[in-house]
Each structure stands twice: as structure tokens, then as C-alpha cells.
Length: 155
Image 1 (cartoon, rainbow, N blue to C red):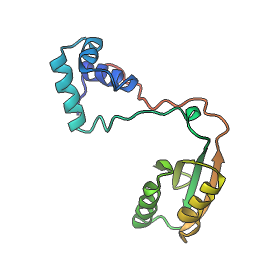
Image 2 (image 1 turned 90 degrees about the horizontal axis):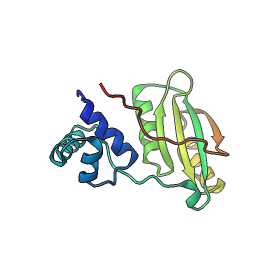
Image 3 (image 1 turned 120 degrees about the vertical axis):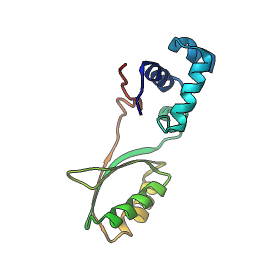
Image 4 (image 1 turned 180 degrees about the vertical axis):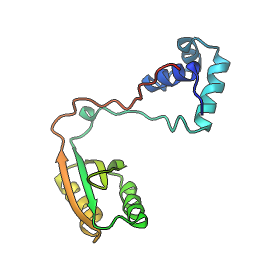
């Protein structure tokens, strides 16, 4: 899909605040409300805009642990990679699941309530899977930056 300057302006604005009204979005994007609405609908229909969510401040939530986990499988056949991925993404505690190369097969970002919750997840996701060869977890002590936006430049 080709994205023109208007699409990119709309996407940049929505990445900052997807809750603004169509009128405000159109004004800030320097386009008409009808154009903004039509373009945003097209971007949603074509899958460029995957979904609109609220980003929560982890400091405002009950305490929890964030872990970045490297997972290496013993065998990497397509069906085995797919099977582990399906199990990982089905876990609510898995916020992100990335297949990576080289190195480990997966990198997961987890958020759990506490260490017992982490241990239960380890048991379900890693220990019970005979194909998981190695798991290396890193526990976050500080989130220095979290920015889920893409730096889009005009065409």
C-alpha cells in the first residue's frame, strides 16, 4: 500500500493520541473532516491501523514484574516453531512475542504480578515443553523508554 503525506500525517497524529475527534484530527492534519474519516477508515480496512488501545502507566498499576525472556528450542521445524509461538501468544502474561535470528528462537516480553506468577508461567510454557532447550530471563529494574510509535516521514 502506498501511503502519501496525508496518510502519514494522520498516522503520526493518531500514534500520539488516537482518542481525538475526527474534527480535531482533520484540523491538525490540515485536511477536511470527510477526507480524514475516509482515509482513517481505509487505513483500518487495509490493516495499517491494527487497533486502537489505551496505554497504561505501569507506575499507576499494582506492582508487577517485567521480564524479557530468550527462548531457544531444541528443534526448529516450522511446525515446532509454530506450536511454541501459538502457546506463547495464548498466555495473557506474554505482552510481546518475537521470532528472532540469529541467537535464540524467540524473545518474549512478559508482565506478571509477582515471582510466583512468573514461576507458574515458566512451568506452563517452558518446563512442560520437551522441545524448549534453553530459557534466559532478564528482569526489568527500570523502564527508561517505552514508545510504541513508528517514526514515519513524509514521502
